[in-house]
Amino acid sequence: MAIISREARVELIHAVAERYSRSTKADKTLILNEFVRLTGYHRKHAVRVLRGRAADAEPTFTSSRPHLYDEAVRQALVVLWEASDRVCGKRLRPLLPLLVSSLERHGHLHLEGAVRAKLLSVNASTIDRLLAPARSTTARKSRRRPPAIRSQVPIRTFNDWNDPLPGFMEIDLVAHCGGVSSGRYNHTLTLTDIFSGWTECIALAVRDSGLVVSALDRLRSAMPFPLRGVDTDNGGEFVNELLVAFSRKHGLEFTRSRPYKSNDQAWVEQKNGSVVRRIVGYGRLEGVAAAESLSRLYCSSRLFVNFFQPSFKLLKKERIGARVRKHYATPETPASRLLTSPDVADTSKERLRAVLASLDPLRLLDEIRTMQRHIAGLGRGEQAHTPPDRDVDLERFLASLATAWMKGEVRPTHQRKPQGKRTWRTRPDPFEDAWPKVLVWLKDEPDQTAKELFARLCNEQPDAFTPGQLRTLQRRVKEWRMAAARRLVFSETAPLSAVVPDAAP
Image 1 (tube, rainbow, N blue to C red):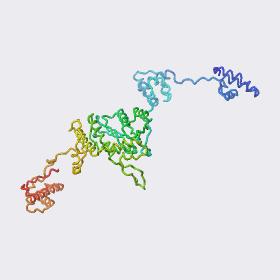
Image 2: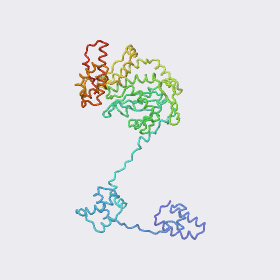
Image 3: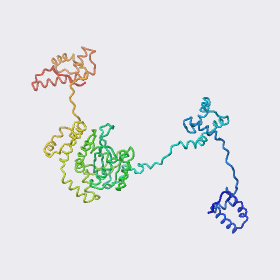
Image 4: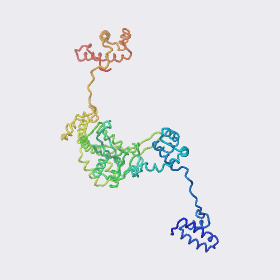
């Protein structure tokens, strides 16, 4: 294609257009071919130009509109823009009359009449256009940011699993902060298989994305099924470049839940309560020593939970009006579900059977209780950092099982520190002066009720007692009667007048 200037194209149009209009069809074809070759126009556009229906057919050169605002106005506008702390044109326009008069009054600005009139008549759009060169040098340079890592991880809801194969797991972190989120404390990384309910717990000394990836890499070879996918929440310890790269490297399906929708991770959230919180409790654990103790506890609990703790599995939900009826399968242990699944390799099933045959549930439970006592002591600051040795003899633990129910809570991580019985009063005794008189009335008429005694006291001393103090007198009389009964039954020699009021307020 020939390259010619606009002026040359206009001259060519004037020279060819008249001859083109008078020529025959065959001559027009020749003229058009030559014209297209010289100008590079599209053939249809060349026809319009030669017929005089295009812009190039009329070579009229019109000059642009003269500038209304000259350089003086622009320079003055720059000064006023700087004086206003660089506000935008829409904010600067209503400020101009006040700003110009103020600067002129203090001698900072001297404008000619024409320039001043133009400044006060300029609109906001023109202000932005005139200030564009100055603002372009001060505007922040926009940096092209890479796409957010969160957009690379697709969302999966609780209803999107559709009975997956073993190996698709939900993962979450449980914080052992004791209700105080400040400082550094231990975490538990919980993984739950959707198909079987197989649960793994990993103790983390701190909340770190690198530790999460290392734990997943270690678990890939420790679990009885291949890791096929992970579903996390939107925390930064999960949704980051490290875990995305790890998932791509090992071919894992990486998904995340919806923000602020904890029910999207219902499976792992349930295990956070029934496994982690049930075993470890809610106390604060911090430091490497506590993390090591947690790791030893989880070594026993993972076998006990996955091999000896049956769990329910939801089959379907049926809505009947406003009610939702849930249908569950027969409770099974996670290991039992894996042993009956056709999607688990035979070699993995053989290893599961071998492990199950070698496990002693009492030995595991005794180890769990031992480590729970140690961790509970660490949380209260009463225990040494060195974990206790394993108990070789199970006779003591076996003998305690028959009477453990009498002590109430048997998990040391859930037992509260015993508090001493209060023996002091928090309020003055309202019956301290009247009690000897009440004892005389009780000695004469032992069957009198506390209400009758209180009424007699109020009759004798109308302003000394209030109706709310009747309950205190009732407790006092009850203790006196119990002391009298003990004296009759056990021949106690303590006088009844020595009965001390209770410590309740």
